[in-house]
Image (cartoon, rainbow over all chains, first blue to last red; front, side, top):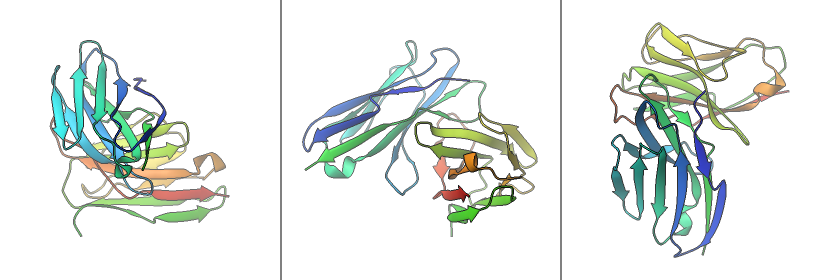
Length: 112
Length: 113
């Protein structure tokens, strides 16, 4: 079973703080790495799909980087806002796989 | 309505009963997935399907059965529900390709009493 680890498990920051989370995944047979944002009582929604080593993606104040050789991805949130409060999931797909294997997520709480 | 929908949204059933959770998508996506969400475990893959009539086990398939006679539907059946199957179930779909994201249904909260 592929192991996808996320850290920290939870995080509490003040409005305006910048923060980052880590996703670790197997470095062999890499195919794709996904980031999802999951708000309470809603469905997970995709933020980024990353496929190339060195990829950097950005959407507003949120960005992500990818290192497939060492098996990690960082998600950054600049100037956190209360509406950024959610669980952030990363998911890994290897070359042999069809399905996404998810980490347990990092739950972010932003106080105003 | 376009998208991916699950039904029912909430279900309470008794131990030993059979229950089916429905998932329907309107995009003609090839791939469909069932995950369960439990505290401390995140999303765990139960079953998935690459096309009609093709299904495969995921990480936690025991006690579940799936079928996919039509591309747009992927029902999940609990043959004899147990309390350990109390969970929130998410269906997802995606098209083919390396860069394709998965789209999730709203989830079904199942309670087995």
